Amino acid sequence: MPELKGKKIAVLALDGFEEAELTEPVKALREAGAEVRVYSEKREPIQAFKHHDKSIKVGVDATFDELDPEQCDAVLLPGGALNADTMRCVEAAQRFVTAMNEAQKPIAVICHAPWLLASTGIAKGRSLTSYYTIQDDMRNAGANWSDQEVVVDGNLVTSRKPDDIPAFNREFMRLIDRQGSARESAPARV
View: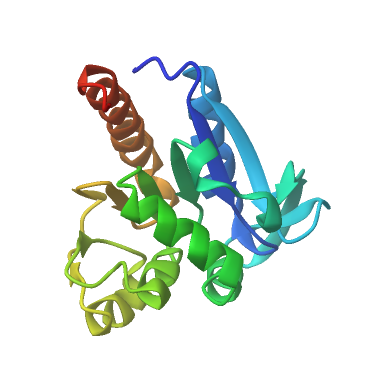
């Protein structure tokens, strides 16, 4: 597992996120030494779901208004249909993810969360996967959709569902590690 000490990861989530798609990647990232912060619309705990059923609540560290792409090394977008359908319309989330993409920083997206990639135009021309029920949405947004447990396209890592989380975590952490290594070896700009 890569060492991610000092890496700052933003997790964007709203009520209705799929529990495992937030908690399991966050646990893996923290175990690798990353600093992970959960962002939402308000500084109140957000409601997780296990498919259709409410489960735990997760604390929020900061609001979307406090997001700063220059202060983050990567972003995680958990799925859950309710969370993702609302998130795709949140302007602060759209701006942040667009800025992260323009900076070529790692973006990890699972399940229904690629809807935000469609709404921002990031999906166009990209190879990705998602939960199978939104494959038409991804294709209509111009993505090259495939049914695989994980797809990596440049700075983008996508997966389909909770069963894919081990592969999703592995590839996301590798991408963060490679990004950090590339920045450390890049010549200084004067």
